[in-house]
Image 1: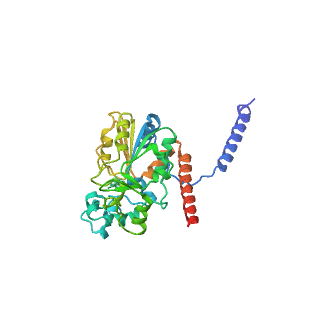
Image 2 (image 1 turned 90 degrees about the horizontal axis):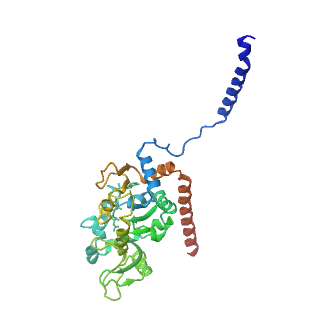
Image 3 (image 1 turned 135 degrees about the horizontal axis):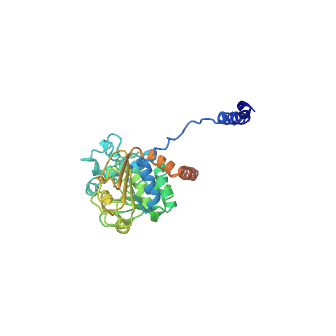
Length: 324
Ligand code: OAD
């Protein structure tokens, strides 16, 4: 038997296998990527994903940047931020619009602004809001300390006990002098529909929604829960804030020495530079959150939760329309 005759059978088998493989490869269609490719294994995002998944007890600290993708401007971004766009109110300085002493003397600028920013059902939660809710559903969230007054955390289905609205909200109101509670619907009608300053029926001073103005204390709930949460937080996830307003801006400095600190923001802020426990990832927080969700294998759940929140809003808008 010649060597060529001896090898002919196995070679044929090989050729058949190669042909079969080629046919299979022909069947594979390269689909266009709709999402960015996952970053390299040793990237900062993989480190962040690892911390998120393996440490738990995540204290999330959010600011106006997380709502920018919803269409709500932040406060301090040059050009687009609210404080660069208040010229029409002739304020002595932009933050005066949220200053309680200024409101006592000149309430009208805040009343006009309230007409624009009073939360309704105009804005839907962002992917970042949905991610915080997902952390809660996975039992990884310790608490979300939010500086925002837009209420989008609720629309993203975050339970009230998981949320601290550090700078208050528009769901209740009181007099700035005698602190008696005011009926919120009447305050809303006065400010939003009539452009009038609501007056306290008891002391004739001005009423305002329970947003924390400069010169006012933060809610008791903030101090109570923070003192419980700081010692047990294992990760501090900071999203979309300039960290310029105390006492919230001090949270990253007050967490325990072993607590990991992650900053996802358009710019580096604060003073975290301990390479063993700090990571800063620059960029739009929704983009970063999506990449993180891909690494964590949570993308579908995240998108589904976000879609659900938007559908709930759509239903609420339709219901409101029907009610007239
Ligand atoms: P700021 O406007 O001060 O900061 C927003 C931060 O988010 C900035 O660092 C931006 O670069 C960043 N940012 C903007 N868009 C972003 C995006 N899409 N992705 C990631 N980062 C983004 O807002 P806060 O820090 O929330 O008080 O401001 C704190 C407090 O100051 C507010 O709660 C408000 C204000 O006076 C009250 O309303 C009482």
